[in-house]
Image (cartoon, rainbow, N blue to C red; front, top):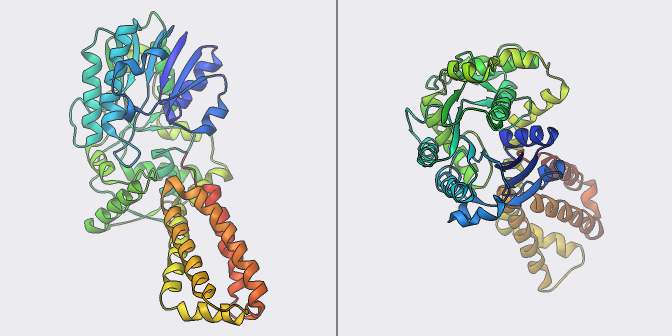
Length: 431
């Protein structure tokens, strides 16, 4: 078959891509970017499309020539500077479905979310329901899959969050969170392959949910057991503090970071993610695995433990790194101004170049700190921070060599800052 796969670099999409290619199918893989995933699957025909820019069915027409089926895995948790729930879940897919009708492509497998046909408390679920309605209004041989929280061996999105929380010895008790029926990625991918078969049923809606209803804290506890950790201490946290945590997540999302802890996630957590897998099993023969069974089949190793610990520390690492550079700039502009001038005068410099050099250094620090905070510019800013640290190290050694002998070790501490920048570069990717 020749398959057009939308959202080919996501958790579900990349797994479907791997299965299709390994089975010998031709795949036109659509994504916004993710060059590393593209390098992993050079056999696919890659197409760059940002659903926010798709305003008509004609944008899809060139990519539907000879296509036998379309699988739409596009999805975002919420709107931000780089994401739009309407574009990803509603308007963008609607233009795709219209293009399929025009091109004569009948089979469309579309991913929605469990429960959106019953309740839509957030922009995420509302837009998902709108996309479903657009597909059902067509004459296509459609299949709508509504998975619960999808987890697999790969750390990604919610799975990464559960691992990170599992590394914490103390956890808040999430009292308002609804129950979850975790579904395994392997079962979801197997379902897509089932419905791509020419003889498979069409015009069906299925809930893909696991066999157990679990609370949020129970899911984390299962991951702690998998990591070989003792049960966490659950504590009651004031609702105001929990709300502050979600708002902080909204701020990180505004900066471009893909954080699963956001206000929209809270709305969906309260709704829960439960359903009935009976129809799914009866139609496909797939019996969903429980979370604990799937995890225990592949015991966690040291890589999993490292990831869980670092995931919990990553926001702190980037916040401290960005604030360090911003703070040095503010100190140089303010209370440290005379000290900066004095060090340059001590090094033999004079004239108007001295205040200009202090201003240049402080401005560079400020730009780097702000750029580290924004996801889109974080990598280049971290590299710039390394270069500037080397420059400070060399200039400090030439102009004021006594700084190497200072009891507080200002020159020696530069190496710690540089190592922190290297660590930040190593973990900057979210996927």
